[in-house]
Amino acid sequence: MKTYNITCPICGTVNHNLLLDETDGWMECEKCQSQTMQMSFPLNNLITIPLFTSEQLARLVKARRKLTV
Image (tube, rainbow, N blue to C red; front, side):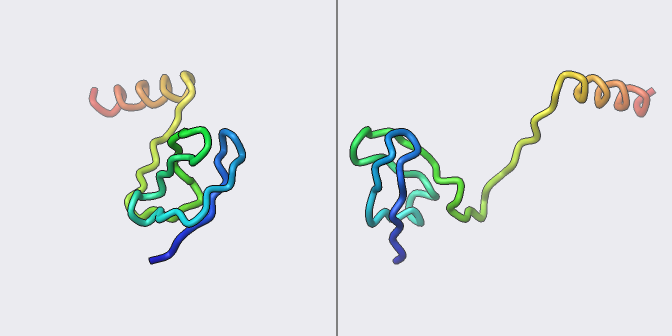
């Protein structure tokens, strides 16, 4: 099984020999105990959620109303 050496994004401590495959990219820092997910870790089941501004959302709602009328 592959291990990773990851730097904590909170305190900067390097955490050695982490088994990120078992935790789906999550780690707990050895020093500050912060729990973070490593975005550089490849995930097969990662779901992206779009982020809309209020203007974009208003346009989407308006366009959808035109389709249903």
